[in-house]
Length: 228
Image 1 (cartoon, one colour):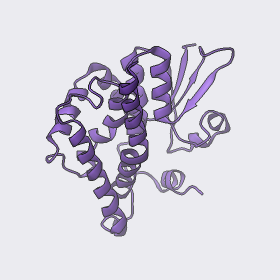
Image 2 (cartoon, rainbow, N blue to C red):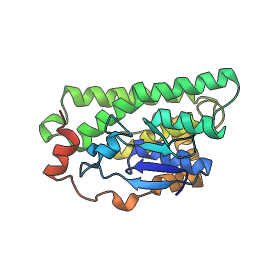
Image 3 (cartoon, helix red, strand yellow):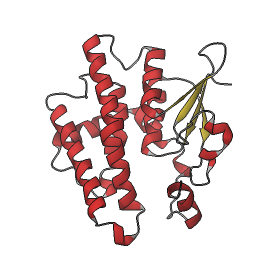
């Protein structure tokens, strides 16, 4: 048994943690969680991630009993504190890292995810409506926030950190969601800088053979988007 179980599906949110694990060089066992089949609703997984979302981890080296951690930002912070890697001990820089973790979970992540839903999965009649325009606009606004932050910086808090791992995956797929990055040269350079890292490439490639190269079936759409 490896020290960590990693519950994962190859999506931008999953990549946050797969990249982190690879960057930190931590041994882990990947537990592929097929979200199209409803594996996220199994009682065993809900005991780990009560929000029925991946990613999640279980740390078998944390103490007398295994420790589950859910939510990508919490996982990255947990692993950074566990290893002492990719988060500064300087109080100000640590504060800034936490700010950007929370910014991603409260701004970039939700807006990007909703834009992706309308762009990739919504009925044709809804793809150009008010809601779709709203989420696309908010995604672009978040790109502007990153553009200003990266002015004169290689990375979000100066040195490469979990803040970059948190924010990068949803920028990686910006073009694939039909949005141009041309007006954000600092973001483009940052995107390429991180994409060139071998650990990042390993993280993004994890389980890529499991991504369906076809539209979701009606049954999968009901599982993914029809939850009450």
